[in-house]
Image 1 (spheres, rainbow, N blue to C red):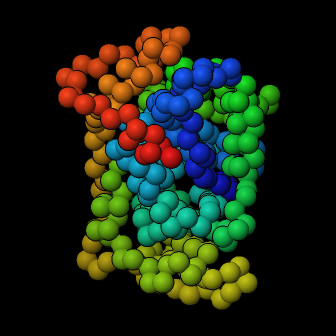
Image 2: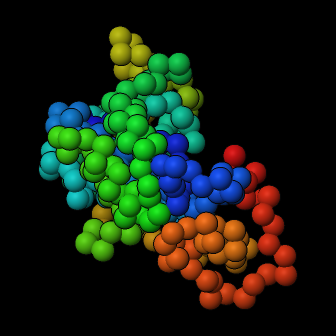
Image 3: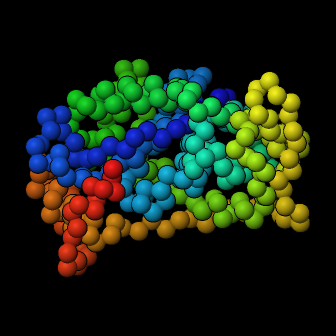
Length: 288
């Protein structure tokens, strides 16, 4: 099976097709979007990530690996051989955490063979961008005040049902974020000169060995990343605690955004004490 994954630009909600004038100059609640596309079925899972998760986990390797892991658990096809396509962003994809996660899956028997292929800078348009584009066309003409409304815009953006929303807080199959970086570092060494390679392959026949090459036509090189004397069986990373938004941000949403919403529950009154001063400009700068 062949999957491709990438982040889309975040959206802000509440969002109105006929934009409310004053809301344009504010910073509403943020929703990140991570897509995993199954190339053979033509469908893509849209992971919709609320702001409090983005603040706690960010858009780095832990968030990418956690959502890819969730996808294999709940949306995968049970394949034993898998090829993963991603762009060349080192912070999110091209790093030792993501590569080590692939080796971990192979060594614990979740896959027999796994391969990563990365695109060169300047040539990073692929299937997820097509799905994101269809959604953004729909998004511009939609009104969305809640995460459920955003989820509906994803579903409505494709007539064939190939854009499928997945809320991080879905009650039936929630996404759990784990500290994969700290966990995998115990078992695997970094790959020297990682940035120069574009293809990584690993197999259960050679546990701990990553076959790397610069380009598709290059000769493969073997690199053993498994640390000596470690036992990987039966171990799993710790969950990352997701705190509430900080008090300043909660009160900003209540004071500045809630009066401009049709739905009063979008930005409820915070239960935490109000800070002495809520900075409004800081959120605009952070969003940009």
